Length: 397
Ligand SMILES: Cc1cc2nc3c(=O)[nH]c(=O)nc-3n(C[C@H](O)[C@H](O)[C@H](O)COP(=O)(O)OP(=O)(O)OC[C@H]3O[C@@H](n4cnc5c(N)ncnc54)[C@H](O)[C@@H]3O)c2cc1C
Image (cartoon, rainbow, N blue to C red; front, top):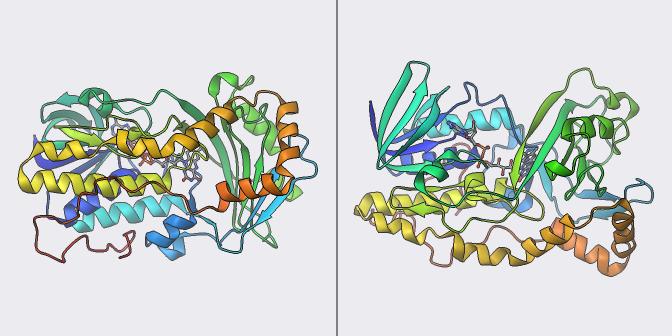
């Protein structure tokens, strides 16, 4: 039996962020993950956008070169549209070491990390898990569901669950030669990526070749579609079309927008479990960090004051309203079911107006919205303490 203030289920970026912030505030935190090694079974490309790079101290040595160039391709792959930003827009993280660094930061802050430990279920502060030493009961004042798109914690807390999902898959490998200008290549073809895009991101160190879409619309399955795409994907040298060693990644991506009910008196959801992913771009790394900051503040207040109602303010419904435009664009993208329609869309994209709209989506300043009723960090504690920075990832003041 284990007793703790907060049980965090899932040691992805969202769970580790909440755990670190709460442990820094002096709360006892247990983080569990079913993975035995956080550097394996990675489910993300790891593209960090400018807003995240500006606002969070990601370890510099674990980020690839900056990318400013995006090339958009129609199904024929001919006459692509190239957009170049005057600012550094994207950097791809070395995700294995990044997860390890974040886990290290959580432990250094005082959290207890239990790997190879699976959440089985529970309620009312009593949760069953099973780990290397067998089954165990964790007594926790609050539970945090950071357990991904198909969250069991959401089910146990009676909260909303993701129903609108894409499935993504990608190959990652070390490239054989440096590129002149790192680029993000996006292919809009509903046969390759039904409802989303196929991508190649080649930063001159690693290449990621991937696709995502609605699973039932992949006629041959997502993996075989990816294998076919890899033979003709743009942005790669011939040598890199059949790399010697490939790491395979993949997983579900919730794109239905932030869920409405993401907290109960017993706990809350963060990251993919809360649907904190842009419905349009399917980017979830920036939202998961920002929502985790908000979650940590809400939990800190509830723990310090003993008022479970403090979690009521952690409300997905209020934030969700800010996603209306992106949800409409997701709906429009889902309607592109024929390559001819995608090709016709490129006619619009080639106009000055089309290029300006694409630049706004790809290079814009939009990010995860700030909460309407911000819960102040460190409320109830000594003034000025706030959240201290960690060695790996912290919000800059
Ligand atoms: C193929 C792909 C590419 C992507 N690329 C990008 C990108 O480049 N940029 C971007 O911004 N977003 C990207 N996303 C989305 C982004 O990766 C996610 O939104 C983000 O990683 C979510 O983090 P998380 O911590 O919420 O979830 P996760 O990282 O999925 O972590 C959940 C953790 O919970 C653990 N877990 C689950 N169930 C249990 C259980 N019962 N017991 C114990 N542990 C459990 C899992 O092992 C896992 O470690 C991509 C997604 C996919 C699928």
